[in-house]
Image 1 (cartoon, one colour):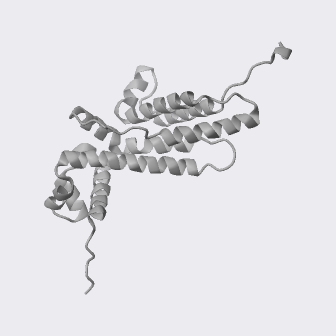
Image 2: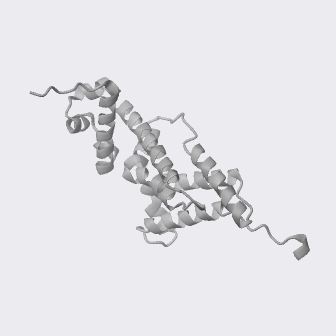
Image 3: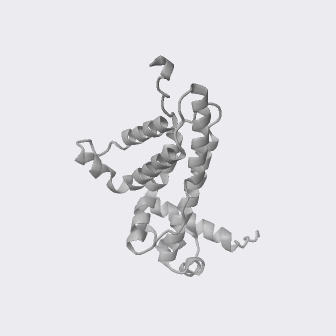
Length: 210
């Protein structure tokens, strides 16, 4: 008879968070209940509480878990870019995916309950790599590269847009006379905005040409 290997605390936490993430994607924050998570993992309610203390602590850990997944997916999107200018389409989709899977609702629910994220710099590495690649591409084309702040502002606006998209996107589109289900067109528009920022600007005519 095979003996069952005892999970380490880190392994148990990982399994619990993965199960909670699946429940979140399927039914939103309300679906992430200790009993449901325990049943999905095959452990007792007490085991979940042992690792996370309370449901609120579990939800906070789940949001941080989503942030780590997001960072990993963004890095993978950047690593997939090889030669030539970066195509932002994969980055926009990688950034929007977790929020579409319930993390937007979770972040809002935790915020309304008084929880605040003290971390920062989620997109710092992304901004640095985008800016560096834009400078190389602009040097090859003779265009003026974007400033780092321009890349920061574009990424901050993009992040805000995709994070609130599952909550308010349809209503805002309707307010402008768009159909409510134009999410794909919105993502393509943001891809174009990011691409335009990274492309830099024409240097303008030289004095000799004036």
